[in-house]
Image 1 (cartoon, rainbow, N blue to C red):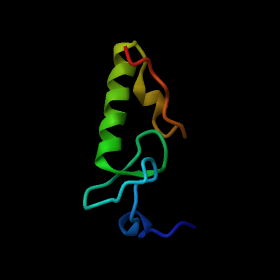
Image 2: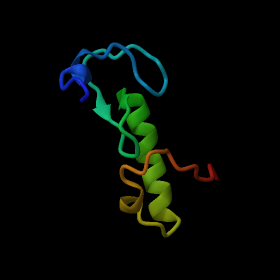
Image 3: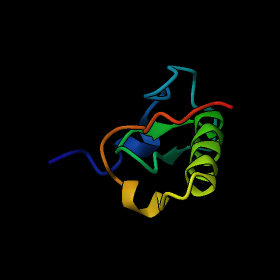
Length: 71
């Protein structure tokens, strides 16, 4: 069983390895603990999925971050 306090004790972002200073969140797509910069990138991906006619709720907790076109 994972340590329930590990989210708060974690020192670096699972995605970009930057130091976690204060604010952090869990990835919308995976169970990674991520910094707010990586969370902002996920928000952009979710908006692109909506724009492309896909339902981002179908991807919640899917275990990977979906790739979307950048154009």
